[in-house]
Every structure is written in structure tokens, then in C-alpha cells.
Length: 121
Image 1 (spheres, helix red, strand yellow):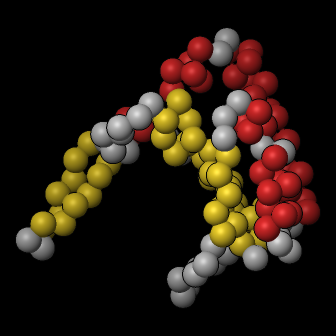
Image 2: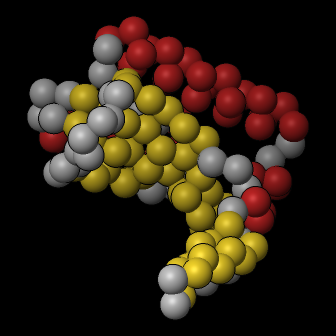
């Protein structure tokens, strides 16, 4: 069964870490990714750009309107997400508990209920 594991970010919190702590956090995340890629359970790991880089698309009267940013209501934003394929929910929860950032902030685990035709993963 596939699950999406989601990490929310906070730009101010990340920028408050000294450069060496940022490098350590990235190395820990890379080790996590390699560990679960080797087990075959990690299908993909994706880090998003800063929320300021995001765009919002709305279609009105058949025409797309693109605006800068998501205009967040909070300081947190979707920073990274993983797609895992595991035997059961408990395994997904166990893996999520090992995400290095889980010791700093909550990590969400969402079951994937439907896959679109044509997915490569």
C-alpha cells in the first residue's frame, strides 16, 4: 500500500539554524532517503522550493489566471514529501517516525487511495 509522508516547513525556523546545523540536517535526511531507497520502500522523495517560489493557478471564465505565491495563512508550508510503498499502515508510521525532521515538527502520513492511469511509480 502506498502512503505519502509530508513534512511542513517554516522558513524562519530553518533560517535560525546555523549553517553547520543545516548541513547536518541535510546529511541526516540524505541518509534516511538512501536507507529506504535500498529497502525498496521509498518510491520518491521530493523537496519543494520556498513558498515564495510557488504560483497559484485559477481558471475563471475558461481563462487561467496565474498569481505569485500561495499567500499562506500560516508560517508553515509544504516543504517536502515522500512516496512510500509498504505492507501496511504501521510500517508507514514507523518510517515516518524516522524522518529526521519528525523530532522538530509533526510529520503527516496519508494513505494513497487512488492512482491515476499512466503513473510511472
